[in-house]
Amino acid sequence: MSKIIIGLVGSLASGKETIKKYLVEKNNAKDCKFSSILRDVLNRLSVPISRENLQKVSTVLRENFGEDLLASAIATDASKLDADIVVIDGVRRFTDIEHLKDLPNFVLVKIDADPKLRYERMKLRNENVGDDKKTFEEFMKDHEAEADKQIPEVMKTAKYEIINNGSFEDLYKQLDELIAKLS
Image (cartoon, rainbow, N blue to C red):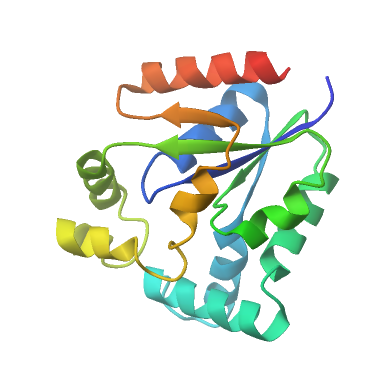
């Protein structure tokens, strides 16, 4: 099998992390996440990891070093990983796929789910400071942030789609079918 590189693009709390974890556990995939670079910077500087701070550091880096800075780093990381499947979590912008689309066997996969369901998931996982205290209106407003504005348009360019409104079993079945198609 040739290496397959799967880029995940999806709305906030649509299930990208769950998909990545499943592919890592079931298929021995390796993973890269756009926000890992940003989290590393914030951790190193002892700055709290919040959605706002992630967006700020992303903006500063991209404005000063090029819009494709993170995409270039992720594409390099993905190409070096020794695995049959590499999962890239957090594709958000068209510039994010500029470098990725040139990698052999790269596919963009759209992940989506009902907004109310995504809101409940976001509160439960509480990944970033304050997520568990957000209202539904604040959650929906997060989709308008600079970091998330292009996601709906980028999702339209995906070759494959996963709808994550059901159980874990439903999600895993869709993923197994996708991997079978790509293999």
